[in-house]
Length: 94
Image (cartoon, rainbow, N blue to C red; front, side, top):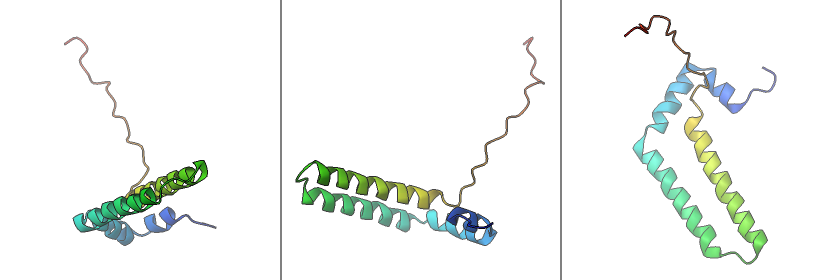
C-alpha cells in the first residue's frame, strides 16, 4: 500500500483489531466520550450565536465531533457485506 488509511493500518494486524474492539466495549470509555460530547455541546451553546456564521460554525463543529466519535467506534469493523444464502431448497408446495 502506498498511502494506507488509518483503518487499513489497523485492520492489517489482528492484535490491533482485538485491542480496539476491546477498548470500544469498555463502558467507562464510552461513557467518557458521551460526557465529553455533552460538555463540548454545552460550551458551544453557552457561547451563543452572534450571527448566522457563528451558528453555522458551531453546527459544523458539532457535526465533526459526532463524525469523529462514530469513526472511532467503527474503526475496527470490517465492511464486508453479508452473503446471501441460497433459498433453492425451500419447499414452495407447503
